[in-house]
Image (cartoon, rainbow, N blue to C red; front, side, top):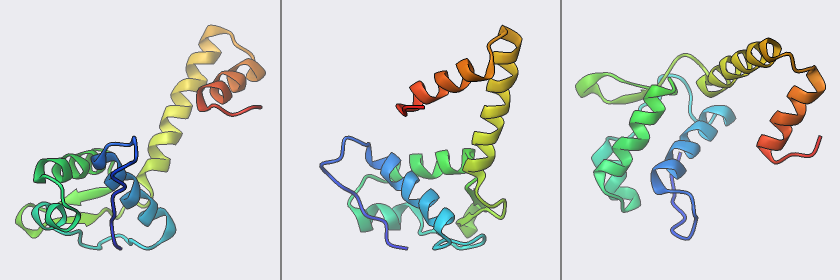
Length: 120
């Protein structure tokens, strides 16, 4: 997988990298166990500071998309698409909260649609 940056994008570079790795996992371009470039190597390849790439890797690890194995490097995690798992957990928490607040399903869905900028 080749990671690229759009210097004109309003999305910060670390976020562009993070999104591309997640998209690679979803599309199957990146599979569980695939080794990612080192932070320094990727930083050189895309023309970023190592700290920017390290931030993207930290956030991917936090979201369980990748795992770091010390000096062996960073790898795509075996958990599958962890972002979907995180979204499902957030949805469950939201559903529990709106029920506790007494909102009906239509109102709860309308709030989510508005937050996503989607028309129901």
